[in-house]
Image (cartoon, rainbow, N blue to C red):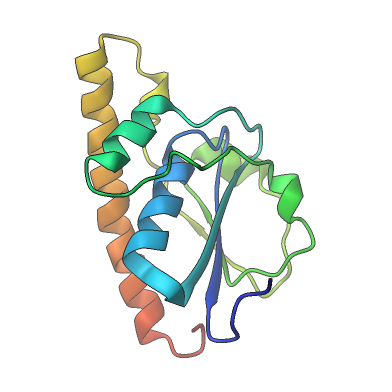
Length: 149
């Protein structure tokens, strides 16, 4: 079912679509509400990290039903924004319709941290909070841009 005409379509890309892009999708969907039609994908999709699910649950956002998807599932679709949240995805991002504004905001990869559970969850929380703060600015930008929404 297509999104309503006044909805801003956003695709968030990362390499594995397992942590950062999943958290960003959940946050934008939750904090931006129905103004946004949000999807996430990976250039090399893996599985959603249990740590991402856990730290998102801590702030009341359930992403446990999310699945990692390939960016190929979205080729040929129109988006208002394509946001890359890691440098590898930025380098490997396919070309989307000219209408899509590409935005890059890299966040640390919490899944890459090796160490104990406490340290790993701490980094997941830090990245989650950084993403939420960045998304708040993105939502404000979209709200002030009547041409987009």
